[in-house]
Picture 1 (tube, rainbow, N blue to C red):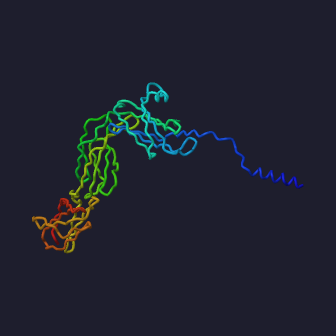
Picture 2: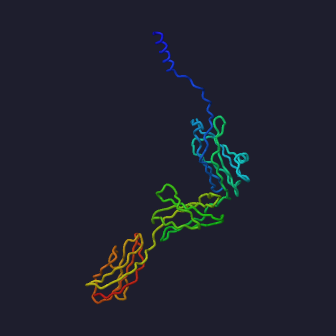
Picture 3: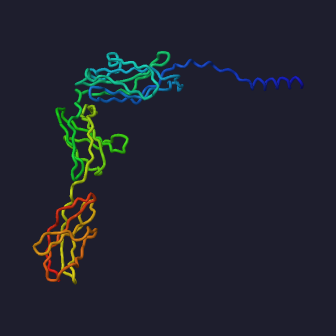
Length: 330
């Protein structure tokens, strides 16, 4: 019995020991493929952007960012063949940097008037290359000229911008960007099909800067110019409201009662009543009012009076006077 106990204890001890398994194959250290390659033409440059991989296909972290190879070449005739394209493509090698977000520039001149296909591969520490990134086909135009002659002026509807159209391809337009004095960067307002733009979203008295960028169709995407020179303006409201409509007057008890229609302006501040005795000159009657009616009791019975109304906006611009009404005081 004692011998059996020794063997049982030995069996338990062996079961608790770790037994080495089959040796693992060496890591291939092949970087993961890039999946977000994108490109656009800006003026005489092709801008290429992508995110460099940090992991291998074995899901192991790379010790450092890998060198990258950018391939650029013509599509070729017939059905697209990746191997044939890669064999004839130009290669730009970029050494590893510190940031995963990569931006490269290529001259656009040699590709103008045709299509260039772009792709990138990462080079691992043992020289093994990743699979191809997503491929980007870009139709390249002769460089678009940057917009010139940007100018603007304040109008009753907003800031009206105009610029020199110059020469350009069919379908060309202009992106309009604006930055307020308290804003960090320019925001896109829209794309103009003609060489003018009315910015209705301004506030008079604030300073704004505008920048233009020409764009044109290029295959399934757009080519763009370098941004033009900025134009700054501080628009002022010097535009009076429209004259009020619908003025009526009736004789009351020892008074003349006036009424009129509401003016449609959003920045309306009030109304000024004007009065003239007989055929005399009009003069302001009291201070401006915010209501749509006025009662005049400072009268001489039997005298003839004429009345008109003017609208005032928040900038204290005063409209022309409305059509006058004539009433004899009771």
